[in-house]
Image (cartoon, rainbow, N blue to C red):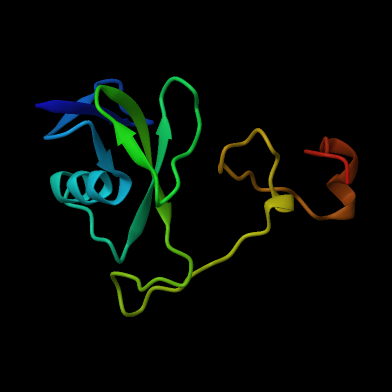
Length: 123
């Protein structure tokens, strides 16, 4: 029996997928993780990265036995939402500081306060 060790990027502990053979197709690993974590394929996709080399696997790749991988949930562009009333909001990456990691900060836009704020980035 062969193993692939995987963990989500925000979790410290690895889980293990057991399979027969020398390698496992990426789509089979994704299906196993989504079933085990109770994720729906219509809500997100999984980005799988080699834990040692940091290389992202592509859909046609196979993962060798005894590999360790990092898993990230990513949204499906144009995918269906779990809620009928949900709206997809697209953001422009230039609205955020590159090191903010998705955290936004309210910025005062009035001229009276313009001198008190430091710009997040230079255009």
